[in-house]
Image 1 (cartoon, helix red, strand yellow):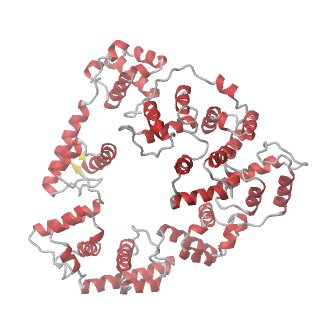
Image 2 (image 1 turned 60 degrees about the vertical axis):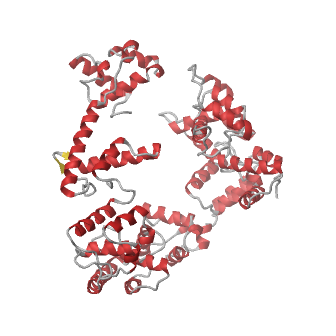
Length: 624
């Protein structure tokens, strides 16, 4: 999509344009069209040879024949003139205000929304630098007006610096030891914060502070103005007590205003000071002690959003809601239920302080790990154990001694997909069959349950089916049987083949050259080969193969140097295995990380793919 046009909208617009205003005149850059339509038409001309014949016929109907498209010129004049006009507006704004960072999204300059335009230019320049490593020509033009129009730190920081710089240019001196007298309270607070965090600033930020007289030596002597500090603290604590009395928490968002006082920003400054003191090993300040007395968790090690969510659930429980973890917290609203489930599922990853807070509302380690089995679940597990197929990869319609085992297992897989911490019944199912619920099995279950939808199979299921056609030879016998039940077979794959001829990818030559000395294609994403981004190309190629969109020619060409270039298990596993295999063949000792990895493979042997087990055995890694 370019300029808002697609094949569904671009061709009708172009047809209406030719009827109303005459030929498109591609040799002159589509001068009478809108910029979006002209750019889209030019893109079709440049990619004409790769279009479908039906698309080429549609272009011929609006006058873009094979001969005409050869002379097409880009639609660029409008963009260039608009940029020059915007650049003149930016220069006028900078002449008046001394900087471009003070232009907000609402700023207008000579009729142009300058702030919004600058925001777009910053985004484009960051994307350009990410791709090419250097600023764009437009960014250089703006840098000639204001070198810090797009700083690598926040615009708020740059605006505050400019305010301090203007104060110095007016003839004032920034006296750090006296608490910056003559400046506003907000600017003095910002300057004190920069002095306290001087060591954490970027070198360019330190150079800018030096321009206004704040060097490393002067920042060490910075101090807040005593009278103003005490007054600010007293006022802020008063509002903090009032807010806590109403909300039972001080985890206020940054934009919180309480009774006209910007409490959120004040609390953020106090947290910054408290964390800076903690990093330096200093004692708690008077402000930190006072705020801790109001709310012990006013400055937590975790996010304030988590603290606010906890407080909301805590208030709900005090109001009479039952936690009822065995029934998925059913007395809570959906948002709170989701939050509580997340805490239960990731309980072991939480900070000890978060775990203590969860214990205050009744969610402790034992209740977070498992939930008891009910009578129906025990009956279902008994049927699962008694099944004689030695696997739980059964069809949805499977009935065992009158019990709908297939349907019950499908329900458990759907639930396990939502719950990352296994329940007691899921642990019991894993003990029966470690492969009862792998990602592949869940996808197969979804494919089975969506085949009879009245509006057809969903797009993600169609993509998965194409991927199974391509990866048939890598599937287990049980998987192939389940796929056959869904009519996903090599014969069906052959019927789906297209007659389109795909061009040879330039990455194939680099892949062959890389595999020749290394013996594999399990390279990392950032691997370069003779300047070619081979790692990134392989990631994209694997993705297309798994979606069933890779040509047979490319698939066979990559399979020749490395049969496991696109394994059914994670690529990181294959890459680590190649390191272990290389060490095994060369007699080198494993690194500590690689020893931990091999030990995990031994302990998890029964959950590995049979081919993974064969590869590990060849590398001298045997089950525990």
